Image (cartoon, rainbow, N blue to C red; front, top):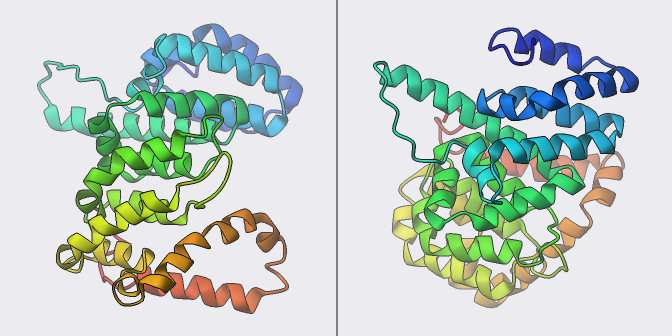
Length: 300
């Protein structure tokens, strides 16, 4: 009863976060029949907490049952998962307070995107999210990339998550490439273009081939002047090492082909960070300096 209520759902979320494994299973059993109703009421933050806690407690059967209920509430087609949770369906509602509706829709969309991002961290449900993103038309992908930080984070997380479908990253980048210059100067979209540069060039279930990255860089090079006019564009130009691409093309090709090394060694590097704190801190500091270039960047 609490999780279905707009106000009471917040203390209910706090309670769910403190439950032990057995109590959590009992709570999920009680909530499961109402999952489609929670979707219709846009209680996406409750569902996000349920998936997070079930994954943390290792109750995989409950995760599968929750995912089944989530799909039932969103729709039978793969694309319905993202279009429902991220409010991409073009439904015209007649309301008096348009501004209030816009604020509510933004909050609902953010909660839905955060729920999908959590699902990407769970092996079973992540496959469904990848399939749903692949089924989206290009205009909806661009809309996700430019709407808010939670929605673009969904795309960047999906891009950096190994997919059962080896074509996922390639298909996503192929769809985005014609819109590279537009996204590179977008407040949120530039994060997606930066994320493409960090994906390995070789790999079985996580890779973007060199020739596709080169196509993105060619788009950026053709709009260099426009990129340099805003901090988002300058951030993208640095991430893709645009100056190296212009003056030392051979070095740029070598750098781009070596991008996969730090990605594959990410966990071992994190484990030895304490032994190499000085070196790691230097790299992180350099990255922070790049972000801090524009005075309003952090606030935006």
